[in-house]
Image 1 (cartoon, rainbow, N blue to C red):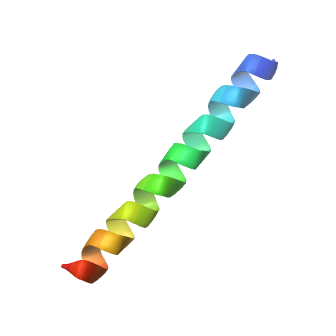
Image 2: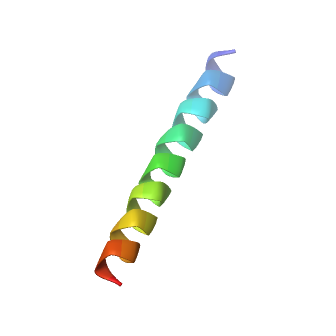
Length: 29
C-alpha cells in the first residue's frame, strides 16, 4: 500500500513539473 502511495505521489509531482515546464516554454515561445 505504501509503495503504491509513493508511486502516486511521484507521478503527481512529475506531472506537475511537466505542466509547469510546458507553460514556461509556451510563455517564452
